[in-house]
Length: 232
Image 1 (cartoon, rainbow, N blue to C red):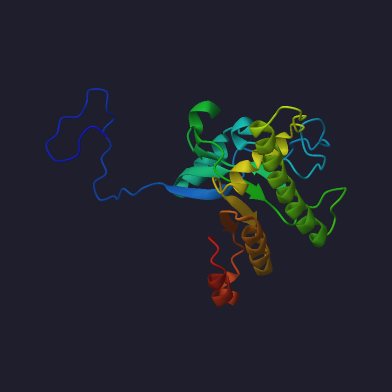
Image 2 (cartoon, rainbow, N blue to C red):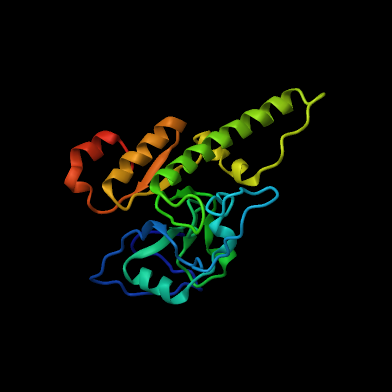
């Protein structure tokens, strides 16, 4: 913005649009989408420096796999949205979301900010362990416990490396450090109201900055949802 007011001179390269009788308002931001993210991302078993479970890939970042979708962007802009946070699909630990513009520019130009928050699902089914909700909850807790151990192990090694072997590098656990340190939020999908309480329990246990993607039925248990203190 170069100038605001009456009787101002437009820059010579400006495009003049007559907005008489219209309103100007800030563009809306959708905080949870899969815009520009393919549904066919491979889910190979973890190996080397990645997690052993195919449903745990928090190291993924939407900024690295995002491709603008002209038709979808146009539809969103028509409804007043100018930017979205887009997350990787699939998995229990799905990866980090990225804030992108709904523009016709290249992926690099559309990305405004990477690693906004980590997406976590308690209901993603895989062809192997875990196949039950109880198992998925256990895997989420164990993964956070492993991430905290990993941080402690590296801290101990860096303080006194002499005579010690360095811990094995694990990019999946390393990528969860911003969550366990409270630097980045964890976004839990909650397709039903009890999932809100489950997410709140996990967040309380590990000190997470919790966001919840709600289901639209929270009004049925409004007081208990409010008392949980979660951000929907």
